[in-house]
Amino acid sequence: MIHAVLHEAKDTVAVAVVEGIQAGTELNAWIMDEDKIIQVKARQDIPIGHKVALSDMQVGDTVYKYGVDIGKVVAPIKAGDHAHVHNIKTKRW
Image (tube, rainbow, N blue to C red):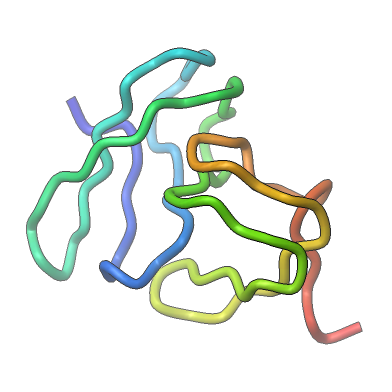
């Protein structure tokens, strides 16, 4: 089962595509550009449509989703964490 998708291997987050991802779930994330599956263990519940971190990130790091810079880390993130507005902010303002 595919739990999350990302476009490029350089992406630092993937998007949850199934309901009910709970902490502790071993996630299969599909890299679309390479047709490859990677795994990450969810450390927190991840709502459908939200992001899951694929690697540890520090404050100030750039976050990539679908091959695009979507913002910067404002609170430390561990691989498997729920990545959202509480730990990522846009660089626009």
